[in-house]
Image (cartoon, rainbow, N blue to C red; front, side, top):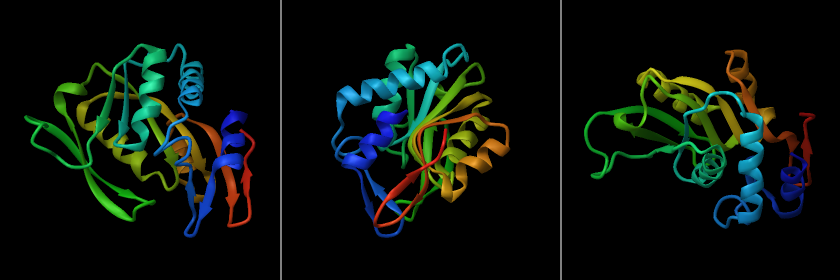
Length: 191
């Protein structure tokens, strides 16, 4: 999706420590017209794959997942980073390490929202080392749900997470793939 690459080059900012800031259009402030395009592209990529639910982790993946869910006409479920009082009953839980925040989160999904009859599309804003996706895959496994694949807005391929997950036989589609980045520039992979 060349539009994602163009947005990164125009509005993104590389921060120290390998962090790509896209808060002006994808995270903190959302370009809603562009978000619709993202949802349409994810729906196009996974058309005919039998997706019954979309699963993401709060919070940055929610808007992207919702856009795809609207276009695909399927429910969106998000794993909460902590079990709160409004998450009751049985839950699936796993630990996910955040590269961006260098923190471990115990993410949870209520068992009433994910089950063995679901074919799940995993959606997130970034894929770096693959920790978030592995956590979502684990939640699906606990529920007995089938993983249809993953749709990622931006993959930092040089960190290896996407390739490792692909090597396990899981389909991963990224809208922009970064092969290298430093303080001066961002280089994209061929998709």
